[in-house]
Length: 131
Image (cartoon, rainbow, N blue to C red; front, side):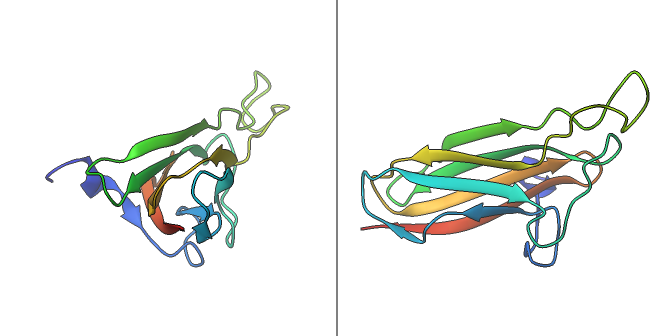
């Protein structure tokens, strides 16, 4: 293994319930606020139980003109039915869905990463053109 990147799995989110889905326009005007949403389980539902859940989703943006990516969103999902009554008896279950509003100055690639407590790290990407 050469680094943490080797631990990330990739898949088409239409066939795999762990890969994050990034929802936003493919093309936007520069400096215009745009909503970037991310979720896990869009086509195939992912369990949300004490024993098996998505713990977090992060979004990063790598502009074409830069070497490094910028972290634009960190989202933790911390209620999975835990309770003193027992597993899955709790009053709250957070769903792995999030959104943030961002202004982009140039084209680049959005990267979504997620963590399943059973099946590890997952990643996906989406190209965004700024006009």
